[in-house]
Length: 372
Image 1: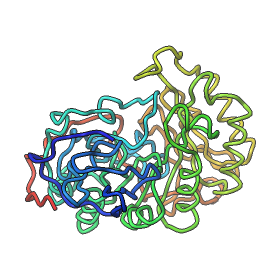
Image 2: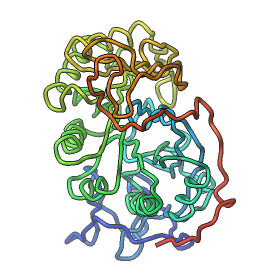
Image 3: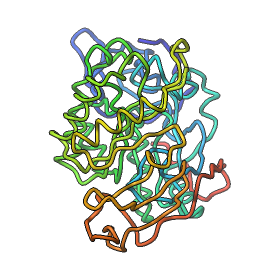
């Protein structure tokens, strides 16, 4: 556990913890079950013990806000073409050696958290900028559970949807509370062996699989899955085959799966960029297994990023990068050629945000700070 001076920090009292007989308190939010003495924080960096309570020290503070295309999350079947107000805080409850957002998720600097915003201000900013949704991203919203839920509630009051971009590493009870407030999610299924998770993420595979099964069978949350394909680590045809077979068997054919390209980062600078042919192979394995919507990401490939009808093969949504180039869905979300429904959450027409990325300064918007 990490020691930190907490006296100068504002924070809201966290949920999901209990005292231990030896005087420590145990955080029950995620399967790490960090056990803390006074003044210590958990591995995630943002949940810490102060006195006899567990506090969330980053409530109301963000590492920055930006309007992105929803396809960047990536979500290809949730309000395509629309803008999403994206933000994160700092820290993470996994220790991925290949982290692609390490400057945020591995941050231990309070300067990272320079942008203050109440839940109400975030919701107002989304509404005033024309965003259909707000995404908790860049680092995992599981660790700022209370803040994310408060933001989601403020957004729902204004008709704004919320999206969780997460590794799915969370315990049963907080998972149930969290997803009651979410409309969509993208879950990182980082690999499909316990060895991969243990050695490269510092976590375990089974809790992630439990989250995916929970989302499918016990919620109405629209979700998609992303697997970052790392050369020599999780790119074998055998492992990819096992992954897609599990998705088809446990979650069904309509859950979209994204295979995305790795680039050297954080503590895995020795690995090469994922070849496009590896992603194409993974996509074909998924399609042959019976999955209907399998995509390739972090590369420009129109075939791998477009949505096709699983019945007649017509292109339903053409994409080049994050730009929508073609739209052949009816107002009801069916194939305009054969009438087969396309799984997802669609509006009558796609958005026109395109591939723009627009930084946002939250202080320019109304909304009072209410930090728990």
